Amino acid sequence: MRSRPAAAAVALVAACSTPRTPPAPAPAATEAPAPPARVAWSLTWRGAPIGGAWERDAGPRFERREQVVVRRGDDLVVSDLTITIERDARGQAVAIGVTRWQDGPVLDGTAVLDASGGWRVEVEGEAPLSLPPAVPFELALRDAAGAREHHGAVILAGWGFAVAQLDLVPAPGGDHHVARLAIGGRRMEATVRYDDDGAIAAIAGGDGVVAHRAALDADLRPANPPEVVDGNAIAVEGGGRSVLALLDATAPRPPALPGQRVASATWEITLDASAPGELAPAAPGPDRTGTIAILVQRVADEVADDLGATAATAGAARSATHGDCTTHALRFAALAADADIDARVVTGLRLDGGALVRHRWNVAWTGSRWITVDPTWAEAPAAPMLVGLAVHGARAADLAAADATVFDGLGTRATIR
Image 1 (tube, helix red, strand yellow):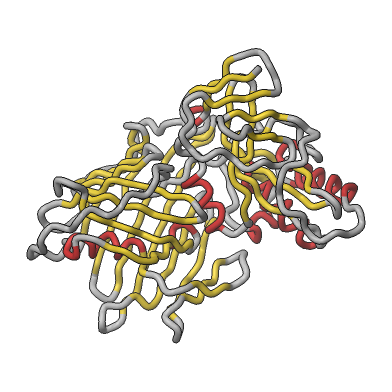
Image 2: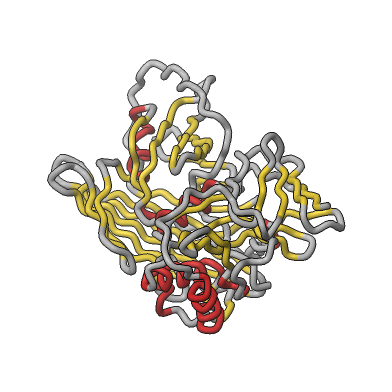
C-alpha cells in the first residue's frame, strides 16, 4: 500500500513517554575495568532476529558498525551503519563520521570539533550547521561502565547528528542502569546492563529493539527477517470514518493539525477535512493553493512508490526516482522551499483499511492558512485519514528523532465510529 512507511528506527535507546523521575543515588564508587576493545551484540525486534552490532576501540579511533535486515511489505531491506570517532591525545572526541547504506548511501556526514567546543556538522544533502558541545552517545554509554552514570548532552551520529540530553543512572538495586534521553520535547527510556568486564551486556527499550552481547565470531544475519510495516500497524475496529480513539494509548496526545481535532482529555481524534488545526500562522501572502497542488502532483508523478527505498535527506529526495513516504515528503519539502512556500514534515499514522500504519506527509502554508497534503497519495488537501503525531523539519536528525519518539505508547487497540 502506498501509505506504508519506513521501518521503525533501529535505535538502541528507544522511545518512552514515561515521566522523568529523579536519579537514584549512585552506589559507592568501585574500581571498574576498562571495557574490552572489541564487543558484538545480536539485535532483535520483538523477539525476532534483525541483525547485529559491532564495536572496536583502538584508542585514537573508535568504530561502531550495525547491520539490520527487515522486510517492508514484499521488499527485503538491508541497512548498514558505520560510525567512526577520532580522539586526540587526551582522549577527547574531535571528529565523528557516519555512513548509512541501504541500496546505496542514504546518510553520509561528519562532525568536527570547533574552537568553542561545539560541533561543525556537514551532512550530504543538507546545509552545514553548528551544534553545541556534546559527547558522542556511543562513548557516553561505554564510559558509564566505570563512571557509573552520565549526565549531559550527547550527539547521536546515527540519527543524523541529533543532540539530546542523556541521564544514565544506576537503577535501585544496582543490577542495571536506566538511560533517559530528552529530545524535541519528548523523553525516551531504556534499560542498560553491563557485564563484569565493563562491556554492555544488553540494552532494551520501548520500540521493541533489544541488543544482547554476542560472540565476536557469531553469524548474526537473520534467517527469517520480520516484516515491520504490518508488524507496526495498529488494528482498528468499528465501521465509522470520523471519530478515532486509541483505547490504551499512554503517549502524549497529538497536536491539533489541519484535518484533525483532538479531544482535550482523552486520546480521541475527529478526522475532519474542515478542521483548521492550531499551528501558528506563517507570514501572510498571496494564495499559493494552486502551486501547492501542482507540486504535490509533481512529486507523486516523479517518485514511484517503493517501500524498499528511502531518502534520509531532502538533498537525496531531490534526485530520487522511487521511494517510500519519507522520500515523497522530503521531495515536497524541497520543492516547496524552492517556490518560497513554507512547508513542514509530519510524522504520524494513516488509516489504511482496518489498520493505522506509520506514515509521513506535509503541511503547507497557502498564504492565509495551513493545509495538510500527502504527496505519496497525490492529495492536496489530504483526505481526512491522517493522524499527525509530530510536526518537524526536514533534516535527517528531525526525522530520526520523530521516528524514535512519537510511536511509543500508542497501544495496540483502536476504534473508529
